[in-house]
Image (cartoon, rainbow, N blue to C red; front, top):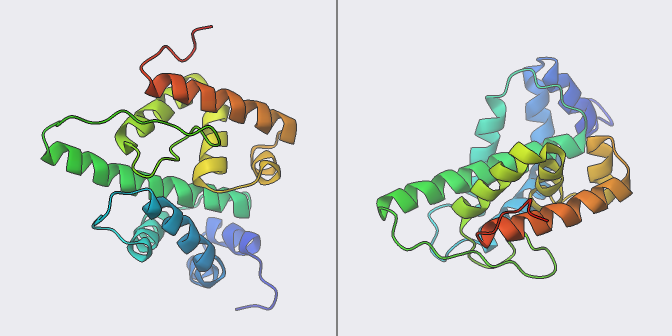
Length: 192
């Protein structure tokens, strides 16, 4: 490894097609990705077949398959990693749901602090569907949710990743939480 290589430098090199840059990047970001995975897994049902380390490894495999991404910075990488982990868990939940043949799926309740999937056992399928609806209507607000909640980024890091002001991120975050809460409660999210 070259001295003083930062995650952003390695991401840019990987995006240019330097395959070994990913190998040098992994040790620099592994602990943070593992913390993110532990956070995700803490919300899953007890006895889930995936463990945090397996979730990180599966996310790595999915990220490796992405060719020539125009990586912007470290925040962009963690947002994509968070998205990959979310997709893995949603795919697992959908498979489990299909196994049950649609048995009574509980509604998701949201706490006042996050209002986005912060209960211990959220219905990931319903949340994913709501996020897809938000993305269709309000793409940037959906990105704010992914970066803030799923990626664990601060308001400032999210603003940097999206090239907007921190105040815009705060407004989008408030709007998205309310929109998702309405969608998950079966209401029309964009109704006044």
